[in-house]
Length: 193
Ligand SMILES: [Zn+2]
Image 1 (cartoon, helix red, strand yellow):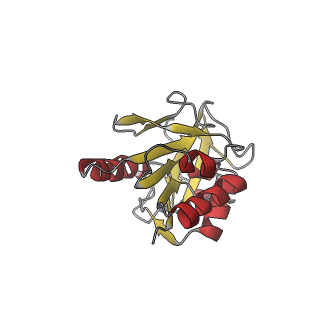
Image 2 (cartoon, helix red, strand yellow):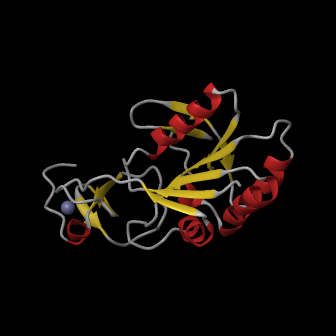
C-alpha cells in the first residue's frame, strides 16, 4: 500500500539531499520517480531542486492551482514514487491532490519541507500534510547556538532577529537560522551576518 509521507525539518537539515538520495536509490533499480517543487521558490531557477552542497536536479514546478493528481495520472510511465521539495509552500488543494495520488493511483508520495515559519506558525502546506499524511518524520538538525535540537526558524535581517513580516519572502537579504526554542526567543547577539 502506498503512503503519504511528510518529512519535515528546519533549514539546513539535509532535506534536499535526502530527496536526491531517495531518487538515486529508485533510479539505480530502474524505477523512475517524479521530482517536484514549489513554483514559488525560484532562487535556484524555476523548477530546480538544489542542495547547499551543490547537488541539483530539475523538478516539475507546482503552482497552487496545479492539478497534481491529473498530471501524475496522465503520465506515460507510472512513477514508483513522487518526491516533493519545499512542500510547506503547497496549497491545501495541492496536498489533497497528493493524498489522491496515494489512494487512487497507489503511488507513494514523499513530501519534504519546513513545518513552522519564522513566526512559529504552520505554513499552509505543512498544516494539511500534518493532517493528511500517513507517516510523519522529523529530519533532525541542531541549533546554531547550542547542541539542542533545532525546532524553530529564526529570521534575521542584517544580523537582527525579526519576528514579524510576510510569511514568504524569497530573495531578500534575510537569513534563516535553525534554532532551539530557547534561542528562538533569546538569540545571542550576532557577531556578523
Ligand atoms: Zn539553542
